[in-house]
Length: 52
Image (cartoon, rainbow, N blue to C red):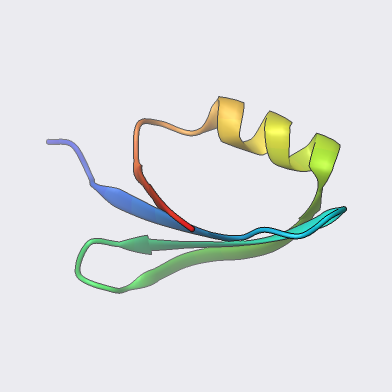
Protein backbone atom coordinates (compact mmCIF):
# COMPACT_ATOMS: atom_id res chain seq x y z
CA UNK A 1 0.00 0.00 0.00
CA UNK A 2 1.34 3.43 -0.95
CA UNK A 3 0.97 6.25 1.54
CA UNK A 4 0.12 9.44 -0.31
CA UNK A 5 1.79 12.61 0.88
CA UNK A 6 1.30 16.27 0.10
CA UNK A 7 4.31 18.62 0.44
CA UNK A 8 3.62 22.34 0.82
CA UNK A 9 6.46 24.74 0.05
CA UNK A 10 6.75 28.42 0.97
CA UNK A 11 9.28 29.77 -1.50
CA UNK A 12 11.79 32.46 -0.52
CA UNK A 13 15.16 33.71 -1.74
CA UNK A 14 17.37 31.61 0.52
CA UNK A 15 15.19 29.69 3.01
CA UNK A 16 12.27 27.36 2.25
CA UNK A 17 9.56 26.38 4.73
CA UNK A 18 8.47 22.81 3.91
CA UNK A 19 5.37 21.18 5.37
CA UNK A 20 4.42 17.55 4.77
CA UNK A 21 0.99 16.10 5.42
CA UNK A 22 -1.03 13.05 4.55
CA UNK A 23 -3.84 13.57 2.06
CA UNK A 24 -6.24 13.52 5.03
CA UNK A 25 -4.36 16.48 6.57
CA UNK A 26 -2.34 14.75 9.30
CA UNK A 27 1.00 16.58 9.73
CA UNK A 28 4.05 14.44 8.94
CA UNK A 29 6.85 17.02 9.08
CA UNK A 30 7.75 20.71 9.12
CA UNK A 31 11.21 21.93 8.17
CA UNK A 32 13.10 25.13 7.43
CA UNK A 33 15.70 24.44 4.73
CA UNK A 34 18.38 26.37 2.87
CA UNK A 35 18.31 26.20 -0.93
CA UNK A 36 20.95 23.43 -0.97
CA UNK A 37 19.20 21.44 1.78
CA UNK A 38 15.89 21.83 -0.09
CA UNK A 39 17.28 20.34 -3.31
CA UNK A 40 18.73 17.36 -1.40
CA UNK A 41 15.54 16.89 0.65
CA UNK A 42 13.24 16.87 -2.41
CA UNK A 43 15.52 14.45 -4.30
CA UNK A 44 15.14 11.95 -1.43
CA UNK A 45 11.33 12.09 -1.24
CA UNK A 46 9.02 9.44 -2.61
CA UNK A 47 6.59 10.69 -5.28
CA UNK A 48 4.21 13.21 -3.72
CA UNK A 49 1.82 16.01 -4.60
CA UNK A 50 3.68 19.33 -4.26
CA UNK A 51 1.83 22.60 -3.61
CA UNK A 52 3.33 26.08 -3.51
